[in-house]
Amino acid sequence: MKKLVVVFIMVAVVSTGVFAQGLGFGLSVNQYYMEDENGNFPSLPEAWDDFREGNGRYWGGFGEFMGRNYALGLSLNYMIDRADPDVYSWAENPSNYDMWNYDLNLYLAYHFLGTKSLLDPFLQAGFGLWAYDYMNKDALREEEEETWVTDDPLMGSAYFDLGAGLGVNFGSLGIFFRGMYNFQSDKPLYGQDQSGSDYEIFELPVMPFKWTFGAKFLL
Image 1 (cartoon, one colour):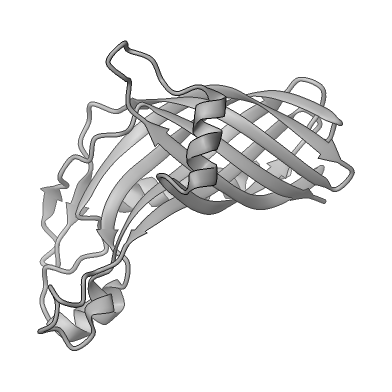
Image 2 (cartoon, rainbow, N blue to C red):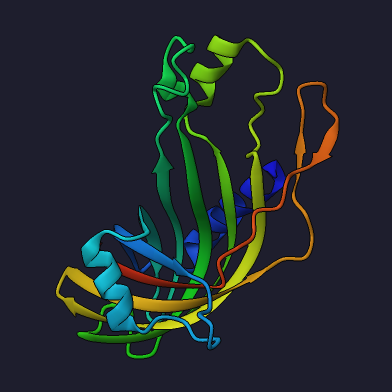
């Protein structure tokens, strides 16, 4: 698990020299889906309806290093599962048991007309970590004083994603949407407990498709 995070950081740092013509950062919302009974995923209008109605929204942010046509980005989207105060009434602070489901994704995008073009069709591929874990681990460690609270997620899986999108850029401001297919890795993730022993992290099935809506600021 820690090796995956190190790889994410190293790739981003090493690539800054290649994608040094511009920077972009912004906000995004992911909507994740399973196939319906006919083997289809929701259309873009259906996903937009879910977004407007607040169904299954994973909020987050991203940053990109941009070249003329290529962009290398790192994004984090998540949904919070608040702990029920009644269930954790015995705890000193029930919010220490809040959970979150998050998607950390390192991606490369090819923009056909240029990363800052008015009309911006693009292809994108990435590598991600889909995980479920406690949000406030430092506070939880202090309350529990137990060795089971490690830095690794309770559940998680690695995945590869591939898809396409379309954006519109108005000078330094842009909006976009994209659809991505997610392909879960068949190799498990491993964590390390407090004694230094490796263990297999419980698998978290990756949702096979996601729609993303976002806005960004271009430098």
